[in-house]
Length: 255
Length: 80
Image (tube, rainbow over all chains, first blue to last red; front, top):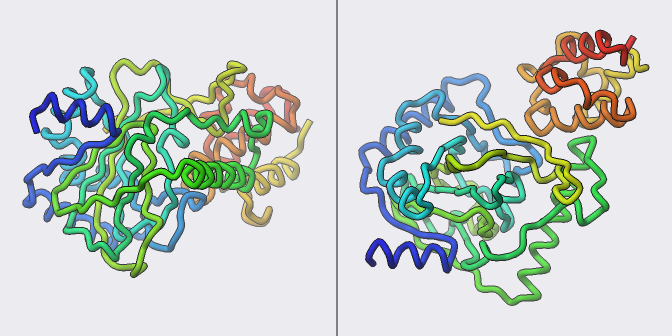
């Protein structure tokens, strides 16, 4: 596929897969992650609200490992993002997964908003050949064009004041997605991901790994989130009500 | 006005933990639930209990420990 054809595919489907061809770096990342798990007394993990099994999601590995940082900002990924968005991409977070998240389908935009809207990108790299039984990544092609979910429109924007209330709001969102998928009879896709394969997904693209035949089996991967130079503000959707001018800003620490 | 005990209860409820887990030394560094999401829950809860006064304090969002939060609220005449 030519670069232009890849761009068209991405615009139409909301995702793109290519291989970064850098197994040497990936092997170093795998070694570093093992060391982090073995040596760190306290590993920074993702919020429990968004966890669906006990396998840790190691956040900000790039602060402990130069190899994780190099992988997150791999030149092939940056070049592709620049080409797709015609703007400078800025990486701001990493999550390393050891196994499947078993997380239902969701969009990153339910967690992170940008102004201008939808200038958020996710990249996910397989750090080994992904076993189809290990809870592989699932996506819904074309879902990036769905309307943006607004938490504030569901309950007259009752701002959450506890983690419990946040969880309830998020569960409402997950159920909304499930219903929409069912009603629209949308097609889910489970791309076969080999070591070094990188998927780029657009801000609102549904993804997750809800179907896992053998929970706990190895599914090493590293995800990075990106924003773009022309973003003027980042916001937390669950606390914000854009229609009424309430924007709860999210601080972004660039990698 | 909220006092120290009330602030403990507000934070505990926001983070869904027992008030016994909250004390002068509690912070984002030693309380797992007090992550970025938990921090926002604490801030919105304090704001609700102070009828919107807390959100007017610009420095409050940077307070990542119980001690700092309490001190800032006292300085701004919201806590005693």
